[in-house]
Length: 230
Image 1: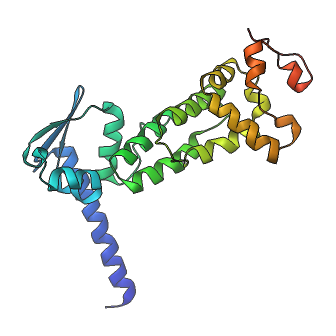
Image 2 (image 1 turned 90 degrees about the horizontal axis):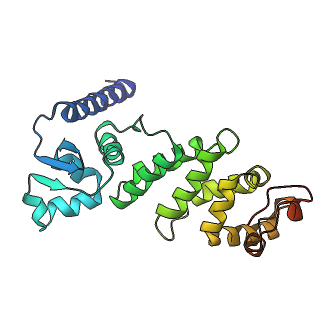
Image 3 (image 1 turned 120 degrees about the horizontal axis):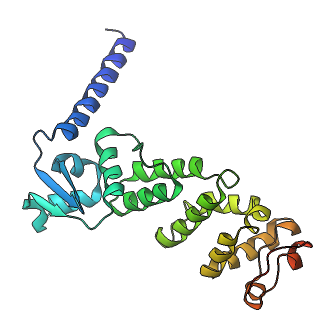
């Protein structure tokens, strides 16, 4: 048998296996564990979770009581958890998770449950989903989600979103929601000030927190009229 034929057989076998794993979730056949998240129940298989998640490997393969349980409750958003389960059985992104904030939630969950391929995919999806010019409000919500929910020391999503902030400062500073975001996350404005003062042209300078507090206007920064604060 030629090397090409062997490769094709292996590839076909892999596709068949993927389809069969997908069918296990769809049918619930041989399910040995029910995960309850809010109003949703997931009929899953301990072996599938065990093989793909170090979190579940410890939970289900160790001495925890959950290892012998047939039902386990999880305090997670049902839709986000569905995206995690979808990936573990389909090896693809859940098509219902399209908004940047949803992608951030999936990333955070994949990180929590130690599924590296999913949080790597989520990071890629996040970059595709962020569109400051196309939907500014959604982009601002995404910034907030990154700052609120990602683990300390994990800059993966921040390193995606921060260059977009710098490149679109003129657009963003005209938006009241972005001003509110800067007031909510003072560290964001400090980082903008620090990095832009070193690496960016003057017109991209971030907003001084004292200016926000004192009720200054955008005109004092950009040399034109703007919305007054305070």
